[in-house]
Length: 306
Image (cartoon, rainbow, N blue to C red):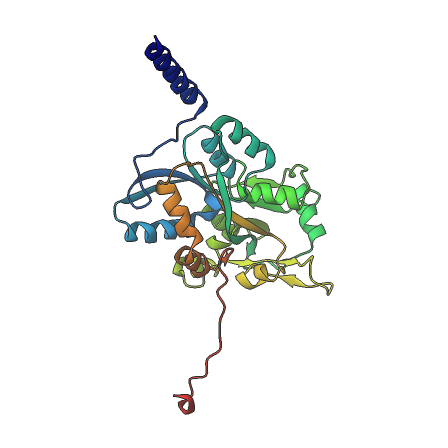
C-alpha cells in the first residue's frame, strides 16, 4: 500500500509540473543554418539586402528570405505568427509588450540597430527646396497644395513618422498621394517639377551606388529646418553627419523585433546586425550605426615617423 501511495504521489507531482511549465519552443534552424522568413519595412530594403547577402556568404547553409512591405503589415505578420523577425522603424510599445507577454509568456527582444532619415526629395529643376517645419506641416496637412508623394499605399514607417512627428497625429491632406514603393517615389518626383517626395536615406544617400548617383541627376535632397540647433535659420540636408549631430530633424531608428525564445537563425542574424560587421554595413550604406561608435583617428605617416 505504501508503494502504491508513493507511486500515486509521484504521478500527481509530474502532472502538476507539466501543467505549470510552458515548453520552450524549438526550431529546425540554428544561428548558422536553416531557413527563416522575415518581414522588413520597404524603406530599409537596400541596406537589409546587403546585410543578408553578407550573412549568407558567411554561412552558406543559412537562408534568410525577406518580404518587403509597409511597416503595419510587418507588425501584422509578427502578431499572426507569419514570421519570427521583423525589421521596422520602431520598437514595441508597452501595450504590445503586455500582449506578447500574455500570449507567449515571454517578451520579444527588440533593439535599435541604426539611425536612418526620412529624406525630403525634390525635382532638380525646382526652385524651392528649403522647408521650415511650419511649411512642411502646411504641405502635409493640405494647407499648401503642393503634391506630396509617399513611399507606399499603406502605413509605412515614413508615413507613420511624418504623421506622428510633423502632424502630431492629424490626417494628411488630399494632396498627399502614395506611390507603389520608394523607387516609384523617386521616379514620380523625377517626372514632376512641382512635387516633393519622401524616401528612406538608404534609397538615395549612398555615394558609392552608381544607380543612386544617377538618380541624383534628376532629383535633389531638400533642406529642412534644424529644430535643435542653437542658431536660428539653420537648414540641413539628410546625411550621416546631419543625423549624427541632430541637425536633420526627420531622423528615425531602424529596429529589429525578434519573437524567438530559443537560439535559432533569427538570433544569429540579429546578433550579426548588432555586432561589428553588421554595424559596418550600416555605416557603409551611409546610415548611422546605433550600437558601435566608429571613430576616425588622424595618423601621421610622414617619412620622419617611419
